[in-house]
Image (cartoon, rainbow, N blue to C red; front, side):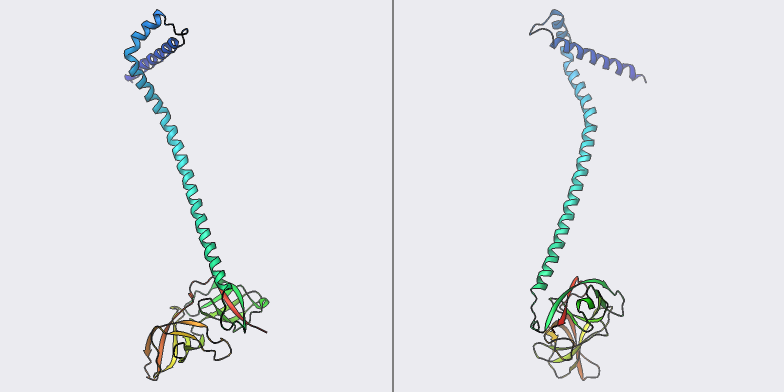
Length: 273
């Protein structure tokens, strides 16, 4: 409290000096009165201190305003960065979807003469460990029927299990209930592709005679036997070959070409006529 009178007196002194300087500056066109000259001479030693005090006062009043302005500008820039990032994500998604649809439209399998292509979106998936199925947004109103093959441009997905008017359930080749007549493309060795465990998504080529030449890296396709899958649909690549305990057959583990865990669209093969 003892410092307050001194601060107050200094403040009043600064104000008086400032007023005197103003009065000196506005006096007549280029004329300096004796009083003005005397004041200038008397105040000359204090000008540096006055300018310093004025600068400090300006800094004390201007800095909070600058800080508030910088904070608001920083918040605006963050909002703009977030908006631009979301736009980039949206454009990447549109690009990915356009590429998928382009691949579907350019898909011309060897069996195109016998089957039409019906593009369907995946709307649901059975998350259980016993069964592997998908729900698609096409049904009997779109001429989808049970046992129609379902594929992607990469390879076989499965077959239609049952339908409603506007949806269909697709049984994946990884489901233990699934069985697909297949063969090794390079050697024409026949077998049955079946799901092993829906929880792991394993697929195997079973019932391969022990004397047949089946090797890692060979390609497995549908054989066309039966009335469901046409011949030549790519299924996957053999990653491992083991002999069954009975010693009469081999079993080959197959890695599907289609990424069955990340499907957005599929193609239902609808028989023509």
